[in-house]
Image (cartoon, helix red, strand yellow):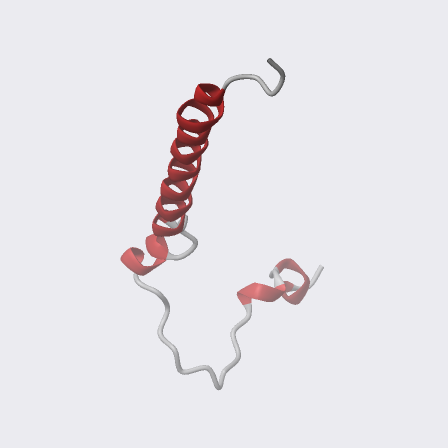
Amino acid sequence: MSDDQLNHPDDRRDPSDDRPDPTAEESVNVGGHPRGTLAIVGIYGLLFVVGWLFIYFGVFLPRGPLTQ
């Protein structure tokens, strides 16, 4: 087996690529979870539940059943 077959294709770099290798701190930040997006979705979900509960308990139940 040659050395070329042992290396993964992603391990080879283009010689014309001048970008430096990422530092340890940059490597940690790459691929992180979008915490801000999760917070926005969580707040939206919470507001949705609060609004649903308000409509159910504040509007629907006080009006009573449809038939009397």
